[in-house]
Length: 340
Ligand code: SAH
Image (cartoon, rainbow, N blue to C red):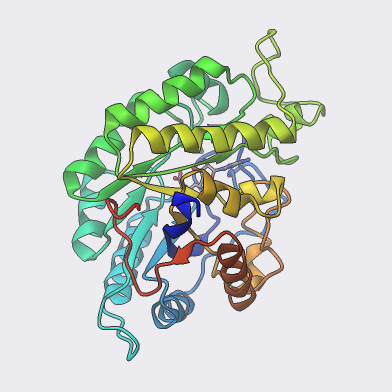
């Protein structure tokens, strides 16, 4: 039997809190300039209901993900929400839910406040560790309406998360336009040098309502750097192969960390998550967001699970893992260091 066949994966129920965002990332479907989507924020009661479902069903943890917002009302709502989720109880387990936040760049004070309210982990991808590539895929310059990007600020935010006490995760997109093999090497070095506890990285998937997506799909782009000969377009097969290769290499290099099987992999292959697990991923984040809301949270096109509900997602996952002989760590928070 393959040594990997005795492995365990841990689950986080993914809740897509809100698609309202102050940023305008050139690749992302919920960027603030995309007027084609309806903006929403899940009401607190609904998030608590979904979290209760995750707790009762043995997911061990939830991830609260959303667009980046920083108004003080929002910050307070998140604090209250985190506190309430942490204090949910269930007759099926005595352990509280693990809480991962993925809510973008915030001030050091906000990170501390959310940590003190009960959040355990925070995911903030560097997106591209090469500062030049980072600049090409994020808007910079002056626009009073849109929060601009700074690579240095991103690094600072990651440092702030670590010092606030979070189990800290980062990651990047793989097979981005303009990305070279050397950039991916650099990404692995970056994750090691930041000594991250968790990684979420996955293939870039073009979205036609974004400038970078239009460029990737051969449509007329606006607001992206002109093709100065640096533009690379990867096939689906290349994107899949590169993503799995990155997971394999990272797992060799960082044996103890948590590596998530990116949902974006499923756009490329139906058993994308299973392949990621076989390559070394040990965390899966089934989407438990209410079906009706999912269509407005398309970071990329063809996002899987948009039509599924939580229960069918769960059954599908169980079957997939059974097929590859990997156990699911039900009722386990699944902190780093448990990879076996
Ligand atoms: N606002 C939060 C959450 C962002 S969404 C934050 O800034 O951290 C989570 C991740 O989806 C992003 O970090 C990005 O890496 C990924 N993503 C966005 N658009 C994508 C696309 N077109 N293809 C693949 N991944 C994408």
